[in-house]
Length: 114
Length: 115
Image 1 (cartoon, chains in turn orange, yellow):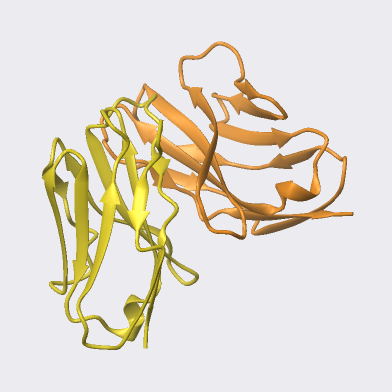
Image 2: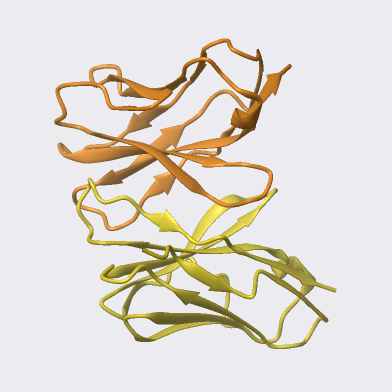
């Protein structure tokens, strides 16, 4: 069965520092996609970044990058130069080639301190 | 291009009343998903459709919940009768296909409060 684990329920980080949010996954699918979503206090779910299991390079989108370590089955989200607006809940998610559904982790609540 | 549209954004109703939540997926997307989010249970997949056909409704909590997708641009999630424990944020999401690379895009959600 597929599983996503986010071990950090909450984090406090000083503004302008880099942040790493942990995500490990488990799947028997040889092909899969990994996603990160941001949910600010306003409630919407915002797609941030995608990493394919066969991608040779780590995905990057602006200040977001994904530290993908396939052998360790980890897909950590790195936010560089954090800003107050980065305070939100962050969800790691995965979709396997043999499954229509995306499964989500329980999320990490990030607080950026001024 | 417009994202996923949900209505209403907020709904307050009394126990026993019927509640209908509406969703318009992104044009061209073949998959539509309904989720429920609560503090206690997190994000739960309720049901999803492919080409307007329900594929998996195993997450629907009970017979009080029903969902339809009469066409490619519209879906409803109905709760009848509603109960206080149904209070949650209900999200609709859509994606282009079922490939592992296909991102689900979420609507803004409907915040439901059942008194």
